[in-house]
Image (cartoon, rainbow, N blue to C red; front, side, top):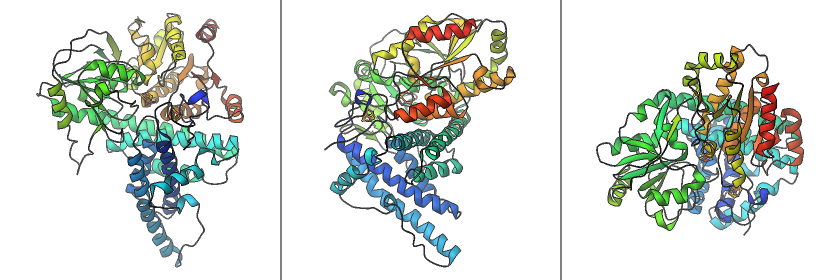
Length: 556
Ligand code: FSO
Ligand code: SF4
């Protein structure tokens, strides 16, 4: 069988994965993901119609959020899981359709009888049918290259929004308007829209991306306190340990509670690093430090870690045999042959006893020395330093900020970001969020009058903090245009949440973003031209070119 996926930066030949994903996704899983996405569009058609009649259904909204999130790169690789979701999707669709039809009849006194899009009506019970249908409705079923590009840009933007909305939902922070937008926009991708309307929809995704990042920021800071300036050690100490990777704070909170007093220590990996900056999480004495770097190095790092590993969403890679029996997935993450920790039941905490027992059985880790990282400079901490930052800019001690946020990934060309960090003039400060920081956060870049030269706001969704800081600086300097700030944008992308963050920046009017290490394969030449004309988006060339550009702005 064949497949076609070009949703991430590592798409084969920067064109698309044709038979198996560079990420390891099989053709079956890729095709089942396409079909699930298609059926979520159908559910969204009914949900949007129901909303117009005042009917909302939280179960439907959650099904859409989780379904979209599960198709994000490196979340779930299990074919059976997608077969089960597709099968459940028909019942979810029947339910919201029924709610709509009842409301329609009550309002109009007659039955609803319009012809509906295939995504809103197709069903089957066999996996063979699912796979055959997937071939028919895949990405390439839209033959017009520009329309396909814009529809996928919208869909990927929505996947990222859904991921952040799901993280907030887990912490009980909900937003019906946001769910209404996700469903309306998904439904619109099934309509006969032209390029202008789809471009408008993509920018509307950017607006909602800002909303969802603000919601998640509120969820995280209300639940765990505002991030504090914190030093995190990167070594290992003796004693059994569990390494937690991914993005889910609720999972690490529950694990910390359940490991307290057991002698099992907890470490963070990759995007879990900001755990150490939240007061209600950093208070646990057995939260020891951060081990390893970005997601793409996980196979060698997990092998070397020696203890148990918990993989929350997302960015799991094919587990090596050397640690397959000591890695556990949870939530939407799934991988064949890997133990899975079940969902919460009736508002109770997840049961992490299996992984805790595993860590104990594995015994003590081998002590390892490390470095210190400074984190926790999200918007509230930076605003606490705002006077200092503004004075430093006015005095000319800080001449430029460089936003180097986003994702890390395999390609060696991503050393571009290390070279920029090393080559920046000493009066330039890096603003970061997301796993992109692992390309330079172990360099000793120093500080400017107590302001660290790497301001680390947290996870990729904490890019909201970076946008917030930019808007506060714009107000402080009484500027008309965000582009008049002394900020350069060197954004690294990998998966769909980064597409969401990019759309958020475009919505805020940011121009001249350099996007690397390559422009998305899903952007057609026609759509790239639109983005270049409207936003002056650029691809990356060499770090020397970028540094020359940055220096030129500093000299001006
Ligand atoms: Fe990275 Fe993975 Fe956070 Fe992504 S760990 S790549 S954009 O999931 O979400 O930054
Ligand atoms: Fe290829 Fe990326 Fe799609 Fe995986 S997610 S199949 S690597 S384009």
